[in-house]
Length: 153
Image (cartoon, rainbow, N blue to C red; front, side, top):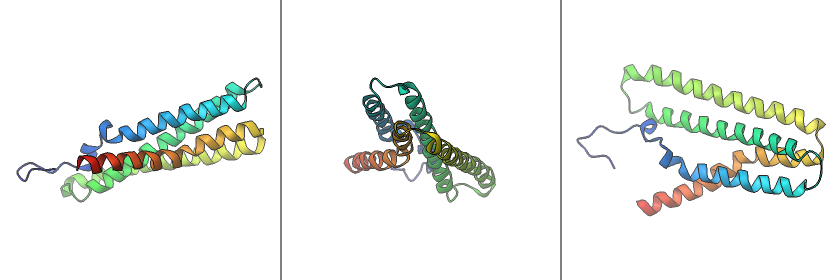
């Protein structure tokens, strides 16, 4: 909580690792569980390493996409708190993060089209687990984050 005599902290200043910790934990747990599923499904078959690399690439792009979205939201929330002369640089930074988000989504869609047309059913599992990171991490991480916020309130 802010003290009346102290300046209000912006959302970008509050965007710390401790705030994002539940999301990072869920992302790593999801990566480990997905790796286990892919390894179990492809046990003894050729292409295990390729499937894990495909999953890792989709997982990484999904995490980058989610992180850039969080940065854009934090900067947009700051627009109402900063002075007029700081708004233009903040909008430029937010637009860079927004462009990065769009690039990540574009790469995800392009890679999904390329992999889904030519891939075996085993790679489809790796791709779907990698893409589902975009849904699982915000939902489960948000659940744990909200529980932590309610407990500390």
